[in-house]
Length: 245
Image (tube, rainbow, N blue to C red; front, side, top):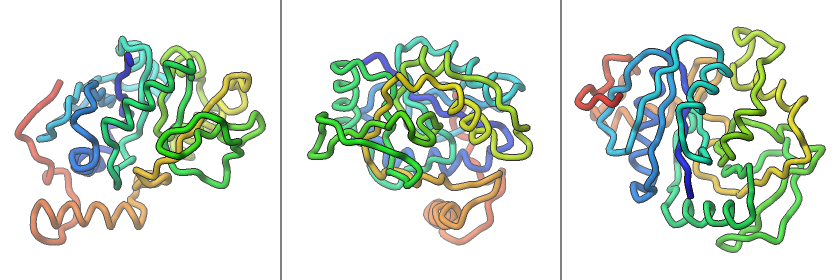
């Protein structure tokens, strides 16, 4: 399938990038043969990751402006969208990725979320299945039918759905303010699906710029592995052997 991975972040969240690359290198199957576009504002990405990372610098802008800029740079029909605080904790293997892509193409699915299920979703079972798990479909009345969890998107659908939030991004996290606005305007005649795969914590590893308790644990485990002791995170800990631009 004509697909790329898009990871959206911002420069002020740089302290989460090392952990993202660390856990992606462990749990993301290198046989998933598509580029990973890492979208941030101005900083150049520096990483030792073996992943096929392509840096997109958007310049300073709002969450929506930066995402639109990145989507317009990407030429594939589909994107698999993620945020930088979605640190994988279980494998996402190439066979699963390929099978999901095949279902998307065959069934002409425009939106397929790959995540755990939360109580805020209203879902119904479909006849589509993979690995003995049925794909679920968001009910038209579901909360958060549009969200920024990890999801395959028809790129044009995502691009055309974006709009600026009513609430200042400084008051609540940028993603949540945008999600809240788009959920009020999103075309609910479009079927959105979910495949349940608990491969990252649904809450992410940070909230409003600070590590969650799980994020602290995962970050500490990484630092112990890399440096052999518990140390507080600071930006100079970042490796700087390979620059991707």
